Length: 127
Image 1: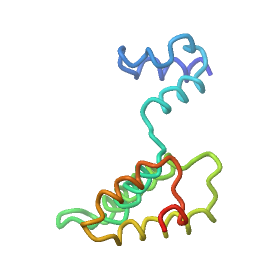
Image 2: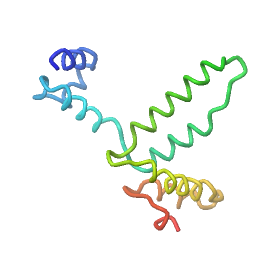
Image 3: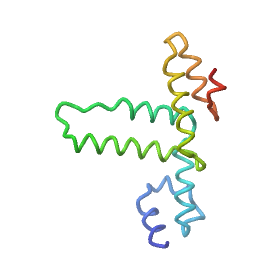
């Protein structure tokens, strides 16, 4: 545990250490505080992460292995944005929400942005 805390401490820029000051011995708390500072788990951020995943296309000079690596990284971003109580059953509703927002024509862009800024996003809210 000390080694993990030391690794985090050494890898973080000095101006970022303020986020976990007083918790330098607790690697879990250090990581949690950094996550809270830098990883927004709002629905809009998750929506954009899924959109990025579904937008991935193989580049002309890209190998299939490199493509697979990009997809894996995009999925890791999505997984890091899930709330702690996320279950696979919740995915169906989240995908429906994405499609509802994504299907809106350009003249509804202000509505789409407003929806993505909400703390909780579900199908009933969108409809």
